[in-house]
Image (cartoon, rainbow, N blue to C red; front, side):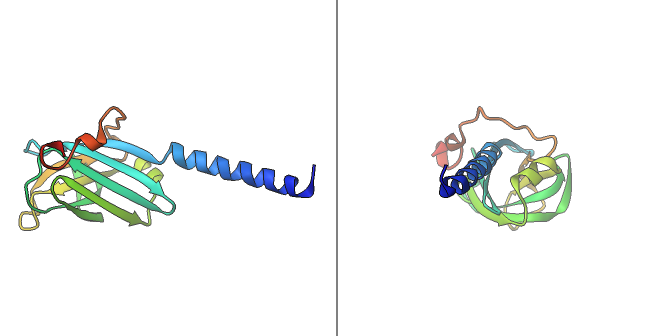
Length: 152
């Protein structure tokens, strides 16, 4: 075995192991459920290096901007302060890249995603989904089938 082979094979194995570990834990899809509304949807979290891509899709958007955020706690006992603000849900969709947290931390902690009725009515939640302990995690939801007008 050449000296280069002896160096490159362990590096390749380490890289593939890291890639496989990240790929296996990189996505979870959880359900968003209406809070006194019919707005339901899905949450997808994807690890992207040191950041997390948070994607929301809802089935009955308000037609305006709906503020969203990750909160500590669960939908039944939510912290009133945003842990990580998310981009507004517009036309049933929101995509935000957040830093300072991993998918594994969100999965193992107690966190929920909240969608508000509007900026003016921020005290009223229209949907909520647990993403940490107690989450309704599913892989049988068509993520792209949610969101937009009429699921578009």
